[in-house]
Amino acid sequence: MSKLDRLDIKQLRVFQALIREENASKAAHQLGLTQQAVSEHLKKLRDVFDDRLFVRKTNGFVPTPFAKELSLGVDKLLIDFKLLLAPNIFSPEKTSGTFVISATDYAQQIVLPALIAKLRKQAPKLKLIVRDFEIDKLHELMVSGKVNLAIACPEHIPDSYPMAKLFEEHHVCVASASSTISQTISQTAPTLAEIACYPTIIASPSRPNFKGSIDDWFSQFGLKRNIVVSAPCFSIVPMYLETTDSIAFLPSRAIKGLDIVTIPLEQSPDSFDVIAAWHPRYNDDPLQKWIISLLEVE
Image (cartoon, rainbow, N blue to C red):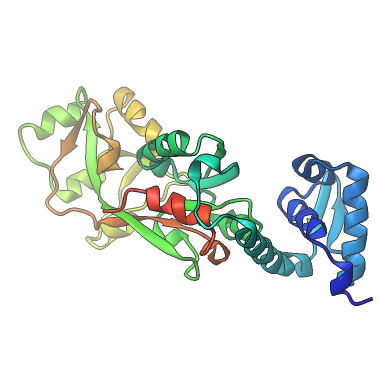
């Protein structure tokens, strides 16, 4: 009997679940199987591919290098089978399952509310997981299928991934309306050097440090900012501004409706793109294509 004859779709689904969950119990629960059945399928897979595929750890499994590479082909095969059996017309209202979006703090504020509203209305059976954007783990998460869509800036996405530009954004300098800084600038516009000297709050969601996204722009003018607070997300910065005599540079769309004052600048930081990206394996997936079509693109 050939290796192909010993392989079936159920085994591939077990393999896919183990890659994503790295835990036999969780994989069994996801597939509606017993843990013993998962173990039996894994034993057959190891025999077919002549590889351990998964190595035990304290609370689950770790895929071998071969298994990680194999997962790309398995995902594509299962998507192709799904397309083969699916109706010719994709019906959002009938689609089910779970879709995982990894988004920056900014994207969670600005992009996702409208998208989630559309998905809940048009695909009520579809469940969504929104997780924080993890630069260092993104490729691994998308390769393993643990993330279906990422919304961030292009420089945080692997070059080989398909992308869709959503819109262009820029930073604005802001302070609390009640701060002494706001009162001062109402009389005289500050120079860029003065801006650099003001106590500054930054958002550093990916790595907790004192390096902000526009430090390189300031360095072009020979200036270094006086960063005094590093916050884990953009959304909390306006609250910190309310209690400190400080400034911050925030994306323009993130400050709408807030009681903060925009500080005019001699020159403005470069604009940046906000994009959606996905793994190439999902290029032809009907659900993926439909969700991307719902994103507001300018």
